[in-house]
Length: 101
Image 1 (cartoon, rainbow, N blue to C red):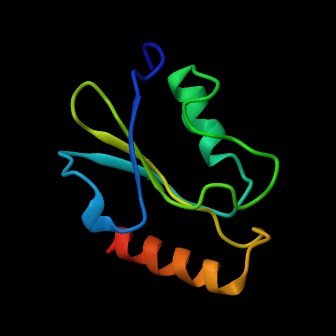
Image 2 (image 1 turned 30 degrees about the vertical axis):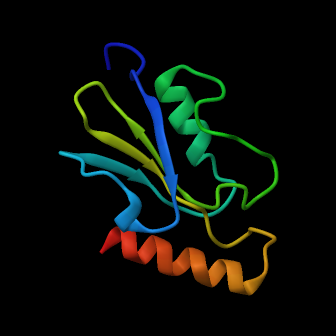
């Protein structure tokens, strides 16, 4: 890598149809509190581009960041350790599956 990614926050969405088209994208998905948002911040060399918390389950929407090329980086909600109601976890499951499909 030649330097930090030039990422800019674009939008948060609860449904895939709310997201803009992208020529290419990379999505970060995994358990809650493993550092997905922290990794995005590290790649961009910015501390608060993607919101970070010590509490699992803080990322609750699909968060989209764009590169100057128009390609996007996607921060998806985590799963597993988040201390949220089952109903919310089920919504995340449907949101993530909808995005991946």
